[in-house]
Length: 197
Image (cartoon, rainbow, N blue to C red):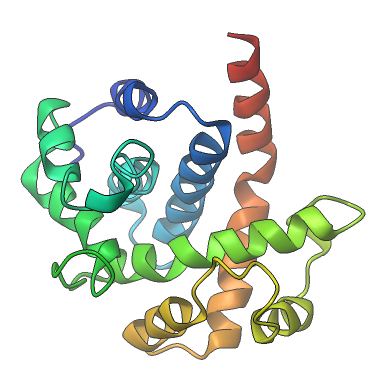
């Protein structure tokens, strides 16, 4: 898997179509989570590819929410993103807004972790520490079962993602919390730097 775009170009492309800090934060978070998963699952050589797919996965969501994963190929192609990464990015919308099925383990991780980072992010914001560092799987499981908490995060999608990977929910939660811990400081620093721009 070869990234057909540099990280700087990918970030510029993301910022061209996304201005809301929340969307930038989510993109940077999923980028960091995907990089951690690449290392953890033995795909270290493809780490850049995994992380850039994470960074660009919602490129069309802010401007074209009704065409999510449908408009993306056009925007990605214009930015020089290759067909294989475009396919991987679109697959995270499988069964929700497109029919590109996740096949590779990276695509399944993106599908599963994308929605879950939203739930973890909401749980973290409620904590006194405002950090994933002290978030435990048992606490996240309670939030997952409480349908009123972060109601916009689809429990069905998270469960479907775990099923795709043949993982128990607890394993997906544990690994994704670890992934978010790994990039939390870097994401916060990048967001602070962007606010100064």
